[in-house]
Image 1 (cartoon, helix red, strand yellow):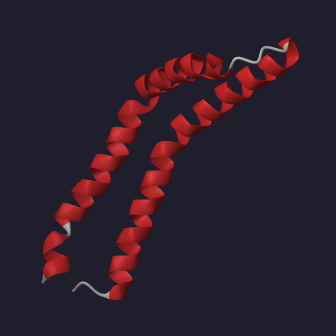
Image 2 (cartoon, rainbow, N blue to C red; image 1 turned 180 degrees about the vertical axis):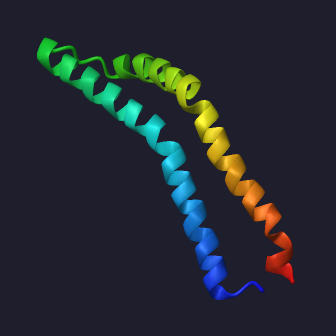
Length: 90
């Protein structure tokens, strides 16, 4: 039966899954952005668009590296939800 505790548990699992799936890409973007900002500060370059290209390339590489893991996490969560669907409805 779908009780308030079950709904909260599903929501908690979903939010945790979102955070763990997005964390590698966000961390890569943060590190590259910080590195480029420090480089800009040291060299006194004031170009604001300079951070976009390295970030895009780094996130693309991170997707290539972590993409299978992220897809596995998300698909496992979806399969678990569909597998227990009869328990939730009944």
